[in-house]
Amino acid sequence: MAAHELLDIYDEHDRHLGVCPRSEVHRVGHWHHTFHCWLVRDTEAGRMLVFQKRQHHKDTFPDLYDITAAGHLLAGETVEQAVRELEEELGVPLRFDQLTPLFIARDEWHGEGANGPLIDREVSSVFGACSPLTLREYRLQADEVAGVFEAPLSHMLELFHGERSSVAATGVYGQPDGAPTQEQPYVHIEVTLEQFVPQPHGYYEQTCTHLQQLSPLE
Image 1 (cartoon, rainbow, N blue to C red):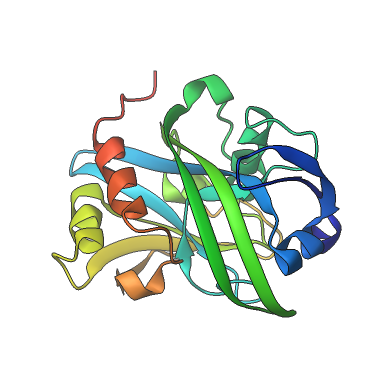
Image 2 (cartoon, rainbow, N blue to C red):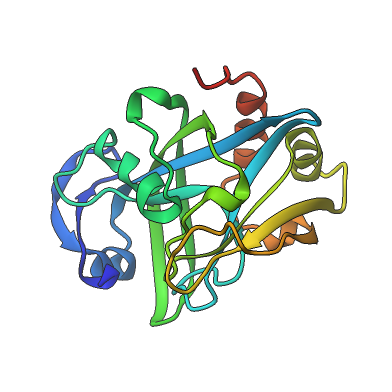
């Protein structure tokens, strides 16, 4: 289970301190490393930003919209190996050399999780890539991802800048067995900034700006 996963922990200067269970990492507030990958899809209508909806039973930020795929680096794991998150959460067969590094983000968050108070201190390596899949081709990890959505990247940047109050998005919800979403009907929704997982100031704007310059997948 996720709570018993072992993570490498660090001090505020990113010096390695040892290994600790994930539940303890969040209880005490140890710094640790995470992997973020944002996908975009190029269409005739323009470049779309792909994002996921978290499952309702997640211990933090249930039901909110989030990074396309993300996860903690396990003890001894490199960021190159963390590309596994794309395959595990979404069924996307991208290699690490197909990702573009965008920036490093540091974030400290204090709040309540499903098991009580927590302190989340993360150093996140943020990447971007062009998706080779349409929404119905994803295989969503049923216990992690409720659905996958896309909206015009330019509109999402305006949302995160505060220039729009909402953006129209299209998506599909996953199937309980994690099968491809080919038969799932499209849903059309309006998303607001408040429906996204909180991130450090400027994180979403910086991400979208970088993604606008991303080269198409070869």
